[in-house]
Amino acid sequence: MPSLPIEDRIALQDLIAAYSWALDTGDVDGLVACFTPDARMVEEVFDDPDIWEGHEGIRGIADHYRNAPGFPGRQHHVTQTQYRPQEDGSCTMRSFAFVTECEGEPPYLLRFAGWYDDHAVKGADGQWRFHRRTVRLWDGEVLKNFPGRGEWVPRKRPDSLIIRR
Image (tube, helix red, strand yellow):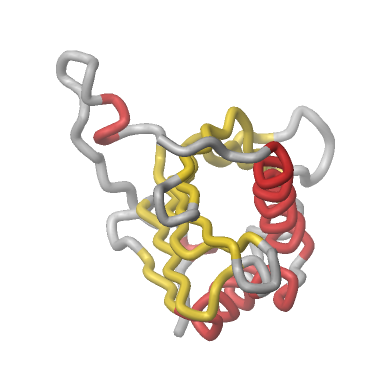
């Protein structure tokens, strides 16, 4: 497997941070800028996975969460990213993800525990962007090495996160 220069690793960390900040602050244009024009983002969290394609789709997910009543105050925390550079110069990554809900008085709620499965590419401008981003709960295939585990359990979407298109 090819090596990943430290500058690229830091740039990919910056991309992940930019995504989280844009999503959690309602910065629609900032979120769109994190993705390639032909990007695909998939949320495999609820019983009916959401697929968002291209900049228009990313803008749609940003607008949805910016206007979802249960979303403001959430913070996405991404950690322990593994970088796997590819022969074509792109990079796949996987990271732990946690979402807290910072509303009212502490202690705050942990709203989500899962992981990102990403594929990023470096553009002609030298900037890394997500080409594919999938968010999953911490269940399913990632736990396949544990007896009796490894099957994804679909969960019902809360009313506050129903996506209206």
